[in-house]
Image 1 (tube, rainbow over the protein chains, first blue to last red):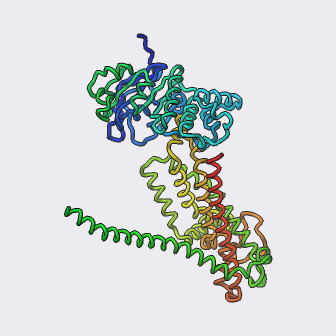
Image 2 (image 1 turned 135 degrees about the vertical axis):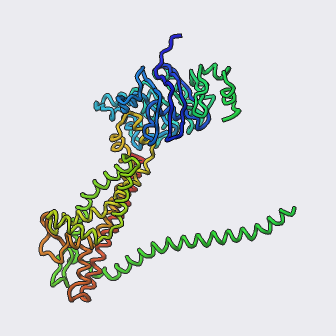
Image 3 (image 1 turned 180 degrees about the vertical axis):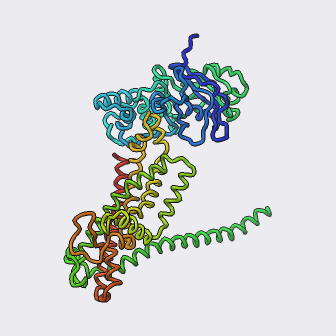
Length: 253
Length: 299
C-alpha cells in the first residue's frame, strides 16, 4: 500500500528538566487520516501532541532530542519559523478556550494576526470556517455576541472553526470532548469524520470508544513510550501486545 | 458495642467544642474585618464633621487670601490634579510595560530576581526619601527646578511598584489557555500579548493604576521639595512652574505661621477635599473595573 506521511517522528526524546517524559518515540502520521493517541493519564500522549506544533517550547526547562519532520523538514531545526509552523498546524484544546471577544472576532483572529486585512475576505473565511465547524447555522444571526455566551459544545466547535480559519494542514486535538456532554461529543466526532478528507488529524483521547469511532490509526502510549501503533480496527480487535489489550479492555488505566 | 458508647458520649462534647471554636474564630475574623471599615468610617466622619462648614463656592474656586486665613484652595486643587495626571502619564506606561516584561517575557533567573528585589524595595522606600531623591535628581541634577514636572516624576516613581504589582497580578489572572490558543493560531508573542492578554487584563491593570496614583495624590513628602510651594500668586502655565497642592497646603496651614488655630476649619476643609478626591478616584477605578468586566462578558 502506497503511504504518504504528513508528519514523521523519529527517536523523539523529551525531557522536563531531568525527567524523561518521552522515550524514543517513532511514529508516522498519514496524510488525510485521523490518528488517535491513547493511554493512561501521564503516559506522555499530550506531551507528544504538543511536540508536534512546538507548544512545549513555552515551558521553561524542556529539552527535545530526535526529530519530527513535517513534509520531510525537521520542525526542530533552528531555522524553522515557529510562528509560521503553528499557523500550518492548528490546535484544539481540552477545555474550550474562546477569547473573550465576539464570535466573529474569535474566528477572524487567526487571519488578522497572519496579516489578512481585506474585510470581505475575512468575512468570507469566517463564514466558511464556521460552516466547516458545523456552527454556522446556530450562530449566523449573532456573530457579534460574545463567544462566552455559547454553550460548551458550541464553544468547542467555535475553537475548531477558529483553528480551521487559518487553513492549517494538520489539526491537533487534545482531548477535545473531555469537557463536553455526549450530544456535543457526538457532534464533534461527526465533524472529525468530515474534516479528515481535508486535514491530517491527530487526536488525544481518554475515551476508547471515541478512538475506535473516529480514528484510522491508533497509537498506544504507556509510561512515556509508544507501546503499539496500527490500524484502529486491528488495534481494537487483535492487538499484538498484552499491555495494549489490557488497556483497551479496561483492565488498567 | 463498647466503641459505640464511647463514640456517642465523646461525640457530643467534641461537637460542642468544635462548634464553639468555629463561632469564636468566625467572630474574631468578623471583628477584624469590621475594624477596617470602622477606621475608614471614623476618619471620614471626623473630617466631614469638622470640614464641611468650610466648604463653599468661594473655598473651592478662590485662591487663599489674607495670609491664608481666608479665601479658598482652588490653586491647590488644580495643583494636585496636575500632579496626579502627570504622575499617571509617567508611571502608567512604564509600570505596565515592566509588568508585561516581568510576567510575560522574563525568564526565571538572577536578572528577574534582581528586578523583583528592586521593585519590592522601591515599594518600601519611605516617601520622604522619594522627596529627597526627586530634589537631588530631578530638581537639581536634571535642572528641572521645583516644578510640576519634577513632582510628577517623583510621584510617578513612587507609584511604580503598585502599578507594576497590579499589572503582574492582572496578567497572571489571564488563563494560559488564551495564550496557547493565540500562539496556536500562528500569532507572535507580541500579538498575543497586545491583542489577547492585555485586553483581558485591562480591568485589573486600570484599577491598579488608578489606585497607585490616588495613593500618591495624598502624599506630602515627595512633593514638598520637588513641586509644591507655600503660596503661589498665579496658576501654573507650564510643567516647569511650581504649584500649590492639597496635602502640602494642609501641612503648611497646620504647622507653619501664627494662625494655626484660626485656620483650623480651613485645614479640615482642605483635608475633606483631598479625601473626596482620593476616594472619588478609587470609586472611579472600581466602577471602571466592573464596567469593563461586564463589557468583556457581553461585548
